[in-house]
Amino acid sequence: MTSLSGQNVLIVGGSSGIGLGIARTAAQAGATVTIAARNDDKLKKAAAEIGHGATGRRLDQTDDASVAAFFGDGKVWDHVVTSAGAGGRGFLPDIAMADAQMAMNSKFWGYFRVSRAAKISKRGSLTFISGKLGQKPSAGTSLIAAVNSAIEGLSRGLALDLAPTRVNTVSPGVIDTPMWDRMGQAQKQAMFDQAAKDLPAGRIGRPEDVGAAVLFLMTNPFATGSLINLDGGAD
Image 1 (cartoon, rainbow, N blue to C red):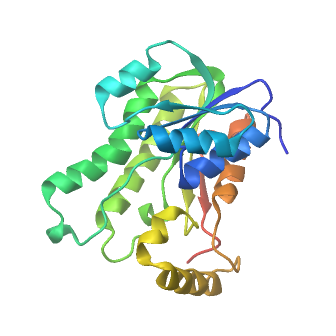
Image 2: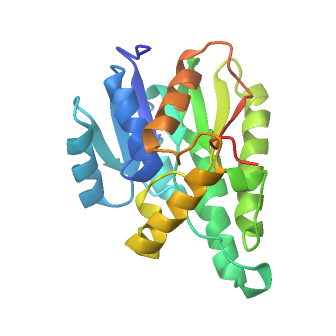
């Protein structure tokens, strides 16, 4: 595994799901890992699970004051990853404007706030996690598609604005995370089985698969303005 020894890595949204998988991968590669999220109990539990001296700090990326306070210490990070955000599913006429704005604030504006506030090494990187719906939307996902597309556009622009700090995006497909637990075990398993059958990769993704892609982007000095589609070969 490529080494991140001696490097400080921040994972925003690192207390669960894809963010937690990225945090585990970075810690196993030797990084000093900090995970940031809103829930103190989840942060404490996740940091213990990650091990390797990982620590958790509270951050609400939807709130200007919280972001300013978090980054106000002037700490310079080697790598920052944003993997937080929720909401936005449904047919557009059925989504209240307040809910639509909340979904945009939760993910796109959250990433925007972190990007403008975080101090990142010139030799370091900023990595966004978007999602395949940004390029391949399905019915009832137009808002999510717009959010993810906006994130990918922001990443390409920031690769120029923040240079030589590198900025990239990973766009995952179906990943086995707690997000799907609300479906119920039987329905979730049926969906996973069907997805695996339809994918050339023959299985759905795991958080550690995304972690490996992010690790590549962190450690490859020629990768910037890049988008990695990590969807198992989905159409």
